[in-house]
Length: 367
Ligand SMILES: NC(=O)c1ccc[n+]([C@@H]2O[C@H](COP(=O)([O-])OP(=O)(O)OC[C@H]3O[C@@H](n4cnc5c(N)ncnc54)[C@H](O)[C@@H]3O)[C@@H](O)[C@H]2O)c1
Ligand SMILES: [Zn+2]
Image (cartoon, rainbow, N blue to C red; front, side, top):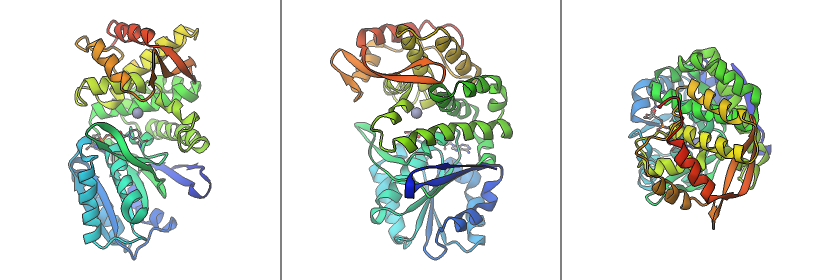
């Protein structure tokens, strides 16, 4: 079992990563002061419910916790105000009070949604993250919780830190291969922004990671969470440093928007976006390896590195212009200057970005 702390003063909390932690969930819950008297609501999605909900319910019930469960449809559309309302209705009907806890059992969708329920219900109650995807190593740390508005993603939300993150590697064994790869994209991102040695490690261990080897996976999630925790500890509310976590996201978000949020998974879009950022880095004089290594490690993790031909560059640029980071003629971009190092460039020429998006269609290698 590995443990690390997100250092945020009185809001600090631990992340536990290991095999079989769900079987000991009640002892972790008791250790962290989760009430056995007030009802506790587990929020999960329809896929995860069929796989792992019963195990968590019976483990907690066995130790005297009063659990109620709410299952939302799997997928991004559950991050909505109407779902928030129905979960609050359920919380009221089940008698959740100020000392109650919300448990998010699932990926980033459940984590963001359940976290926002916890942030809003009675002006904020405790919550615990039990992540079940690789991507959730990112979303479960840092306290950003939100639902979507039809006009914008993650636009209704809060900063609400969990009491703890309980990451049981066994739960990830049921992940579909495409979700495994997509999750690795953000793991690699954490290396690219912070830690060159970890990027090399990811490339060397890519096969093991894709096979969900518990030792490799545990280490990768530990490292990924450590980087996220270090960044968040220094800048909880994204005043400056936290923006480096957006490496690859300006292009990536535009690709997701153009693809209509179903052709590309988030991690896949970010992978292509990180190749774009690396190419931008070259324009700022970064060594060639910034591009070659970025591409190699992402390809090794089975991620796409080329923009599919049918994407309309005008539409991608248009989507980027809606991005809040855009100002006249120039854009703000997270740009790699070396492997493991990035800088925020406030004045990137839009014309350069367009050229790079066009070039992304010509990338050799996978997909
Ligand atoms: N709060 C943050 O800081 C932050 C950061 C990054 C991403 N996010 C959010 O995270 C969300 C994406 O998260 P995600 O990729 O985990 O998506 P997700 O929660 O939709 O999970 C992906 C798919 O895998 C399924 N699944 C989850 N766990 C499983 C398991 N163990 N076995 C089998 N299937 C399983 C889910 O049902 C779903 O179909 C987005 O909404 C994004 O906005 C938030
Ligand atoms: Zn992301």
